[in-house]
Length: 307
Image 1 (cartoon, rainbow, N blue to C red):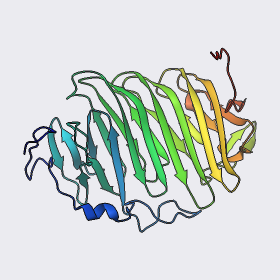
Image 2: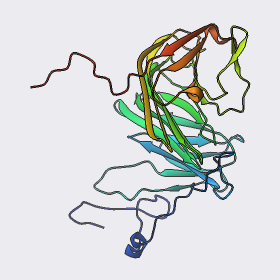
Image 3: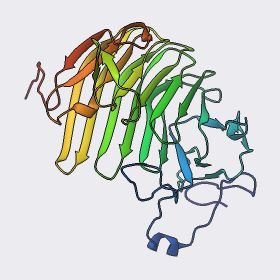
């Protein structure tokens, strides 16, 4: 098919051509992962799918716990997972896009972010959406012939990242429940080649931390596990939306030493003031240091020049 926008081609195997009735656009969109969240669970039983999106030029290969795959092996598309499918975004203008992957909400999928088909370095991002959550890895510099591996928990409370080469990324977790919504962002996390960094949000159903022979917090922590990687620094941003409106927190340049784990006590944050950081030196399971993090959101940092 030819025209002013170029030549279009495709067949039943390529999934590069499609037809959508105009009447579809008059219908109210239906979210495939949405449901009524509750204070007990953010995963309504009515929602049975999660979706994985890629932004940028690359390919994904997703593998379930039984070794079955959906995505691209090189340039070849495969789908071995029952119930999983891909949807090609409505695009055009000659810009290629990775499909949107819909996956059953039954397991944690290993996601291979492949640079093997690239000819130059690209900046990409991977996001997963499910009932009551959104989770993403962004600002990922992907080089040709290198692969990164990551996992997103099916309830959105954990992300692991293993890069094929050392890099800094942004890791975001957003969780929703009946009383409030929270978003956590770790920007500029330094991850060593072949090593795993893990970010976890606990929601009160875990053992309390102990510091100086006393329990601290209420079980609601943002946990940045750096036990396999070298030291570095990161920026922390949090936002909370509830009956009091939106509250924001930011603290920049938090130093994390090699092999340490950081626990950010978001559960006791008052919505305006500082947040307590607990540090486990060597990630051995005990807290060695506590440190207040001032709220630097909406602060002005010099130099600031107005012309």
